[in-house]
Image (cartoon, rainbow, N blue to C red; front, top):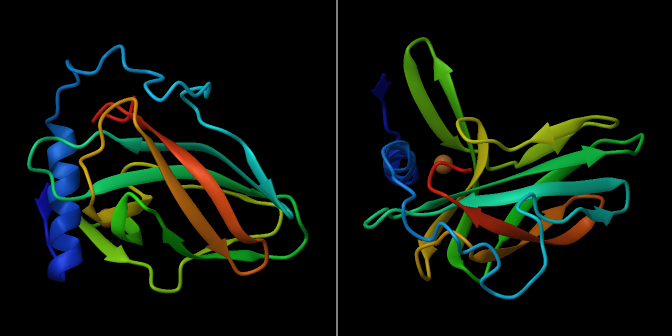
Length: 172
Ligand SMILES: [Cu+2]
């Protein structure tokens, strides 16, 4: 697979995902609830207006990996579309909304400046290799068992606080 990069953010992105592809999760294996919080590895379900956000997780970062990836699922139970506009986290200087997709045999990555539409009655998943959050200027590298708080801002549902459970570098 060839990886083509587009500017600074894309380069960081590629580094992050290439890193996670070769990672080993032999450390932190038993660190499930290091903060003493009782959350399942699938994370919480958070409801806000017509939206249901669940399955929040992030991937552990490998040594030298400059960026982290975050993922979750949004279900829109309403009759109107909503839009994920932006994301913020105390764990990173910046959180971008990214899309990764194969075009021909080239993997492309780009920032979605307009965010992600959550269509009425539909479920949108952010998953490795597709839509994802990209944590830039991370305060401390994510380790398995960590909790990464994020605030999602939706056009209609407003701000939604979510905790991403950090899984292994493979996202398991
Ligand atoms: Cu990315």
